[in-house]
Structure formats: structure tokens, C-alpha cells
Length: 268
Length: 369
Ligand code: SF4
Image 1 (spheres, rainbow over the protein chains, first blue to last red):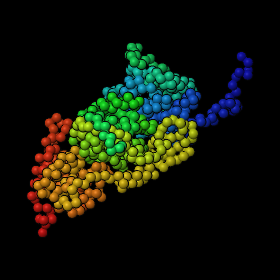
Image 2: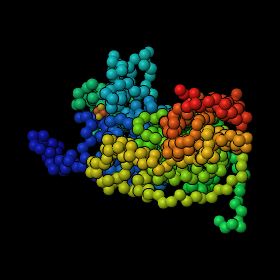
Image 3: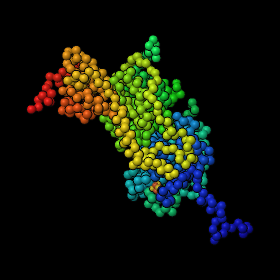
Image 4: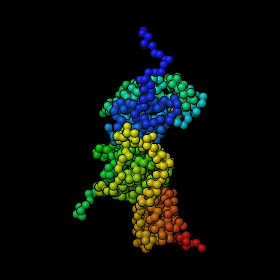
């Protein structure tokens, strides 16, 4: 091995790396204002980059639910309907049915999609609605300060499960992506994370594949993205990624999910 | 239409007639969840909408139905939904949302009776909003109201309600369906089609109206004020009512919807017997026709409110009648054993009996010292 291959950490990084760090995505208009260490802005950025790379920005319509990410409507330069808590898949259905050429997506948190809107997402998936739903799953209601949601994992401490979620008292978390993958009408289900450079890169590919399925008209697609919420988890910002790997990722393994083996393809 | 052309009448039930009129108005999206007596409208929409390239969704719940219609409307399509009583109650969350985020929508409340008056006129969602509510007296009027509602919804960018009932929903009558012109509408430049993505000012529909960081928008306070001003303006100009034989009436009966049709018949009978009775019918339940009611009751000795509930419109009549002390309630709850329709009080004989009983009683002024 020659000496030139060894990275000299005593000096500042070379310009290309610095440029990459400072690059500002075209479709983000300003500062997001979310907590330091929050994973949601990373997920938003991936979503917007994918829309741009697929060259569908000017026919994209987003539906955003309620949660910390709700404030994204001010900074994401894509047309958006901000809807009621949990109802995004129904609104997206209405939009897609009257604008079949639109690229229609929802962005929802776990409290939004799995608590309030469980019925909405399951029926929309079962109808094979040709839309893409993005779930930002951090296992808590971040916006209201860190209470238990339907996806809070066993043992996870929240403001409404201070000693950690105990199935005897609080029941079990709902793996929504697995439920959706078990339904006919579904074209693609995947789970990613934004806790490391590698997971960020993989998650972007999952989002891209989901939208490619929508563009091909093959049915419902869902990408669940595990995101850090150090504020709601009561952990230091820097500890968020490790906490995510240790807790959420154990319950919600990453990757593309196998779809239901028996498929009722009639009429599709 | 020239004088020699007879109108082309079609024999349709209320649900089918409303469907045909909605299609003529350009409605291209409908979503609903079956519930009697609304179900007929949903069925006819599911038959007719695909024929004209529209979409009818047999939604999995009322909540999904109204939010699907919200989405379709946000994307610029004339959209509608409906249900009755309990189903409309589930939809109120979205009705309030649409009032604030300014999405047009027509809601057909094919109600089971007249007990949804508060629900239609007072809402039930959160916040400072009102919904224009039209209460047709029969199927031909419902046909006209359907098109008027689509016009008003778009003119004011707000959810609006038709308050019908089982008789309206299910009666078969000969009606003429044609496109009605209510005048020009503002451009739909707010509707989402995706095209402004990447412009720095991409469109958004949001109750808080906070805009993009590059274009801050009204913000929540400004949005509330703007909505309040809009509803005040609607209240001033959209009052509709019908006065029948009120000029010389000593007794004015106030009734709405199908009940007013029965009451009008009774007024004719009583007039034939020499009683000075007239009828006032609010057509818009909100905005309540306050000015016209005050004028119609100015010289009346008694104002009798007939509605098939425990006295809901009564509150509005008391507010706006010329002399509040003259108001008496002669309606009441009267439900068919099935729970799905009116009971025996909705008939000419009992209405006449109740009016006659009041005529024999001295008015409040007459007993006053
Ligand atoms: S509370 Fe959690 S989800 Fe919300 S902005 Fe802060 S870190 Fe992100």
C-alpha cells in the first residue's frame, strides 16, 4: 500500500467534501427549525431529491399530516395539501383519482399514520391506490413532547410510558409496513432509516423504487423510515442514531419487505 | 327555451335527480358510505359518474369519504359527498378543516328527519366557521339547489350543505335536468396540479396559511380574520326565503324543507276557512333569512314555528322575528318506528290541529295587563 492512500486527518477535508456538506437541495427553501439531531429533515431531503432526480417535481402533489414535519410545508418547494391528522391517504386517493398523471405522495408520522389513521392507510393500500406513502417512524409523538404511539417499541420510555412500554399494560407495537405488505393491491413496501450515512443512502434508493412503482402504475407503495427523535426519546442529540439502532431497528428490521405470496391479480 | 318547447321531464327519485343535476353542474368526484336514506344518492352516483369520466368511491367510512372528496376538490375537481345525521357528524372534522383551508365541497345530508338543524347550521367541528345550508322543499327545488350549491361552494371556496330528508331522497317525480347559469366564478388558481413545484412559491392548501418562507402568507391570525370577513359577507348577501300570504297575516307559520310544503297546504285550507294565516319558509338555514323574517312578521299577532324536532330552528326564529314575545313552538319530535323517517306529525291534519289550537289562544299581548 502506498503512502498516498492513507487519509491525513490532521488537515481540513479537501474541497469536494466541503462542497457536498454545504450543498443546499434545490427544493428546500430555508431552515427547517426542527430539533438538533432530528431525523425528519434528512428524510424530507431524500424525498425531495428523489422527486428531482425522477424529474417529476412539476407534477408532484404531497399530502402532509400532523407532526413536527408538518412545518415542512413552509420550506418544501412542492405543492402540498396539509390535511387532518391521519387522513392523508384518503386525501391522496381523491387527488390521484382526479389527477392520474400526478405523482402523489403522503408524508406522515407514526402517530399520524398508525394511531389516528390506521384505517386510512390500510384501506388505501388494499384498494391498490397508485400513491406513495412515506412514514416517518420515531416511535413517539414528537410534536407533543414524546408520548407513546402505536409503534413505540417494547421497553421504550415515553412520557406516557415512563418505565418503558410494557406489553402487559400498553400492548404491542404495530408493524404497519408488515401489515401493508400482507395486503393485495400493494406494489412495494420497504423500511429504511436515516441513522447512518449508509442507511441514508439505502433509504434514498428505497424511496426512489417506491416512486418508480407509482410511475409504472403498479399500485400502492409504502416506505417506512426510522427517524431519530432525541427530544422525544430523552437522549442527547448525538446519541439518537445509536438509540435508533438499539431500539427501533430491532423491532422494525430494515430492507424491502416480501409481499403476500398469494396475490389476487384479477383485473389488475 | 322557446314557448313551444315542452320541458323534457324525466321520472326520477330524489337521489337520481340530484345526481343528474350534480353531473350537469360539472361534479366529477363523489365519495360516500351507505346509510339510509342517503344510500340511493350514493348508488345513483356510482352508476352515473363513471359514464361521464368521473369517479365515485364507495368509501370505507364517512371519514374517508369526506377526506377523499377534500383531496379531489383540492386538486380542482368539483367534488361532493354526503350521508345523514350520524355520518355527517363523523364528517364535521373535515367540514371545519375545509371551511378554514378554503376547499369547496358540496355535502348532501339526506337526513332521516329535521333533527340535524343544529348539526347543519352550527357545525360541530372546531373554530369560527359557518356552512351555507340550503333546505329544498321538494325534488325540483333540490335539483336547482344542487347546482346552486356547487356554484356557491366555488364562489366562496367553502363547504356547503344540502339539508334533505327521506321524502326528498326517495320521492319519484318528473323533473327537468338542465345546466343552470349562476354567473361567473373566480379562477381556480389555488387548485393543486403540481405545476408550481420548484418555483419557490409552490402552492399549498393549509389552514394556517403560513405560506412559503419566500412568501410568508397571511398566517393564522390573518387567515381567521379573512375567514370571518368572508362569512360576514356571505351572511349579508346569501339569505334566501319564501313568504306566502304574509302581507295581511295575523298568524305566520315558520317551517322549512318538506314540513313547509305540508304547512303551505294547511295555510291554503285555513285561508279558505277565513283565517288570516301565512307561511314563512327559510330556504337558506344559514345564513338565516333574518331580514325577510323580520319583515314578514312585523304585523303578525303570533308566529308559530313548525319543525320536526324538539325546537332547533326555534332559536333562530326567536332571534330575528319582529316581536320575540309572539313566537310559539308547535312542532315536535316525531319519528317513524323504523327510526329512518318522519312520524305521523308530518301530515296536514295534525299541523292544522296545532295551528287552530293556537288561534283559539289569546296572543301574549292580549293577555298582558
Ligand atoms: S420533537 Fe422529535 S421529531 Fe420533533 S423535531 Fe424534535 S427531534 Fe424531531
